[in-house]
Length: 236
Image (cartoon, rainbow, N blue to C red):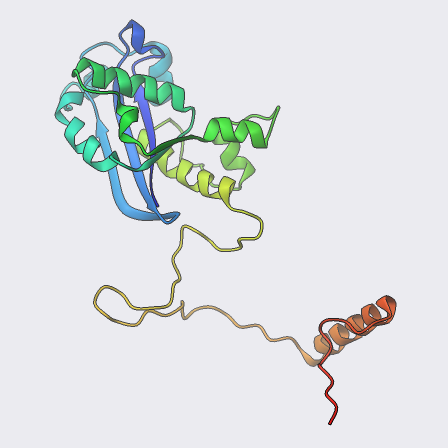
């Protein structure tokens, strides 16, 4: 399963009044693991930046003046996103802006490129009703470090959202670390892959083993029947 985690920064809050996208960042996940593929551009909106928006992302019209316009990167965006499930935090906001940019280019809505759209804000509100569910709040809730996030940035926020999404959707029965691949097998060149060599093996001491056996014996006595961990007795 291929997923694209996406975020945008904009000149303001409402595309209907002329606000435009000024940054777009995407990261790719395949099988719930990040790949090395990303998509990131600053965009020249050809208009001023609202003061409130500038306070959030710090991107000025001067900085963006020599950046490409949206139409010059749209084909690359389509190629990167097409057919994937798109994961966005507060999807209505980003999709509204992206659909508007596509409409200005007389193209079908951006959202039509996605096999599915997942809104992590809506999912977080269901999981944590009545709680703060901003990206910062979710990073704190799932112990994901965002100390380097002093201003909003599309690519950084997409990378953080990828970690948040994996944490939100990992079942309690799954103890794997999805973003890290420790699969044993062969690489693309046929070389054998192995687990990390710096893992420490901590063996229980004799005293710990004896204590463990004592606890198991007490449990077996309490339940008054053969426990499932007892050795199978055979008769000849």
